[in-house]
Image (cartoon, rainbow, N blue to C red; front, side):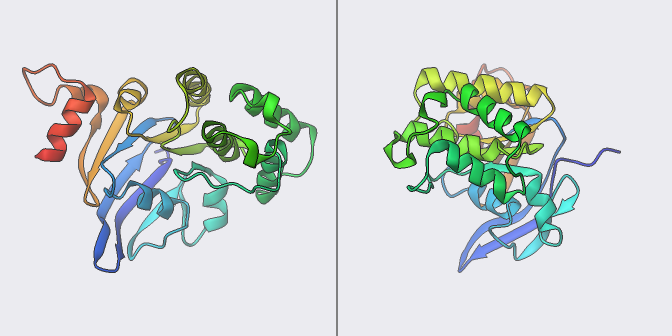
Length: 245
């Protein structure tokens, strides 16, 4: 039996009196394009932070490619690339320097393979002309594409995209999705959170919906769209029904 790309078992997390994750169980198979949806405050970012080892759960376990996030943090983190929702960047470096430093965090020193991969990422994210621009001079959409590049620079098999297209114009969004689809076709597991539900509907084979720290729906996209028999609904309409149930 193959090891799931992500396994979440009974995860609970409180922030004071607020229960951000309330016993979440979830498995995502290798090579899936998986959607994680929910309103603001549903627990999506907390779950992603727990996967990345940035938040320690009160109870439960999380694993990436079979490596426990708590007891085998270094290996689980090497296998995971996370595009955060917030625009976090170092204003002292250029785009290319930012990617080279990020690669160094994962023990990838200067070599032809690293430089070629950075060139490929820059090209696919339409950042080549900005390679030597300082990060603070970039637009919000450009900075978000650099965050995507940072998540990919160590070639992780599991990639989590937390609102990757927020603030990105339509043309550049299409280019980003072409690159992400190619990575998925090459075997990378993609986990997407987005408020653009048409993106999840077109890209994701399976979708989980979260509300108040719990999973309230988990199925293939096709089955979710057929959930309300006799009605022809898009994913946004299904999402609203599920959240209001």
